[in-house]
Image 1: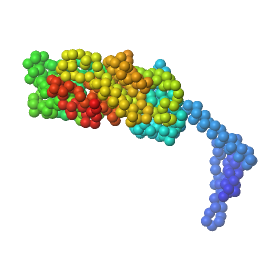
Image 2 (image 1 turned 180 degrees about the vertical axis):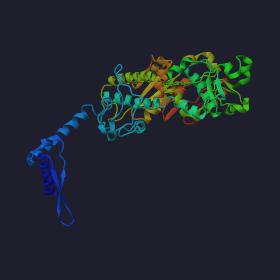
Image 3 (image 1 turned 90 degrees about the horizontal axis):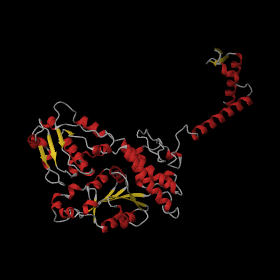
Image 4 (image 1 turned 30 degrees about the horizontal axis):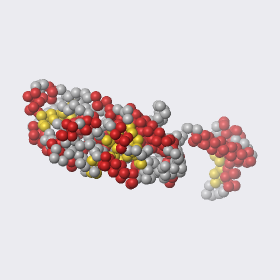
Length: 475
């Protein structure tokens, strides 16, 4: 076989040198015939004639091809591992776009398909916290690696969320297209903090969707700027109810039964008010209004790239300062990334005598310490991220070095930080509630003894409708 191939090669080469060559065909009767072939392209004249030179020529070509491939592989032509994700190439290929801003890389929100692992698969692996060398080629994890890998893990979470931004509006328009006969559910929005505003908007959206109507707001609110691509129709009272009078509003209004309880009449607004536009009234702080559309609510409340960038930067700075303060590099087990536990401590105005008389009750020190101790015992490596409107109090309460305190951030950045945590400890208030609801945390603890027993506020709250069933009461 080898000799036949060499004979054919010689014939081809000789034909090239002569300008053409014949192919010998052998027929069934043993006769042979030749077929004249046209001249080949000019470059084939450079092929050496002797077998030795020809083999040397092939060897050189193979060597050059190999060298070119290696250069492309390691010279940046092919996508290589991220500098913030050291390890084996097989598991570290990403399509992140590194934007160097104050030294913090950020991600491209238009991720393509990840080689080897999809984004969802990689995020799932990260969330298992079993990133040992068998998975990601980690051995002795340095301080720099620990910080970079932790931020990379959170970046994946951010990227996945940003990819969902705006989908709620697409699904809304598919389910209830806007027409001249569209019926609307609106909410006047009670002035207040970010958490209260989010409850108003989410509940209005949920009631509208469950009644096959369109949601609408009367005016723009400054909180909307915190979220990526937030879109909501605007309608005036005249457009909704025919005129601006209080009487027209009163006829269209449906009020809540209590601030933290689900109001049954909102489940079917047509039965309550007939085929007309309606205005919801109240705090409407119950998950039953909107949790059926949780994917849409989380899409609607996707923080902007700017907010997430600031949140990641704040987390990176705190963790970096922490690991640099360690006396040695063995605080975390080799190949083990820390679990990030968010702690939200609401105090401030909640300690006012009037608020306490009404029924507000701040989380006790015993609860805050025991909940943290629980996660310290159940996780091998833990970093606590503390968010509060009373950081001085928290610093007196938590003395261990792995408690990091967030201060100087906007309310949106603080909530975004809380939403990125792996596990969460809540005290009281709607701010922490929404940080937990928007998170991917598998364990969320809340303070069981809020509101105060026997208070007027306690009568307004149904704990089973305010706290999600998947959350854990702790005291």
